[in-house]
Image (cartoon, rainbow, N blue to C red; front, side):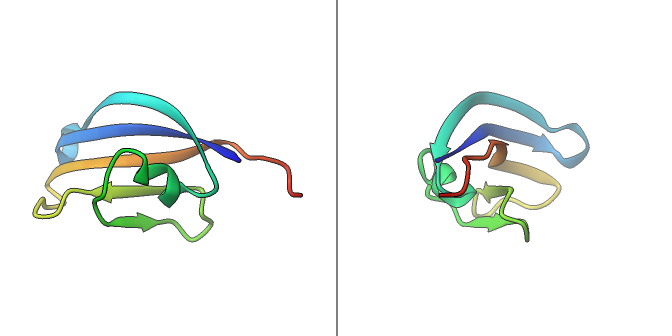
Length: 76
C-alpha cells in the first residue's frame, strides 16, 4: 500500500488554506480520497496526486480535498 497525505483546502484561489491533514494508506490517490469525500476526483497523469473538488465551486473559490503521494510501496 502507498501512503498519501490528505489535506482539505479552501478559500479564494490566491489564498488557499490547508487544514485537516492526515496520512492514509491506499492503492492509489483516488482510493485515498474516497476515505474522506465522495466528490468527483481528478488525478495527475503519473497517479501521484489527485483532488476531489466540491461540486458547484469554481476555480476562484475552492473547496476540495487533495491527496499527495508521500511513500510508495515496493512493487510486488
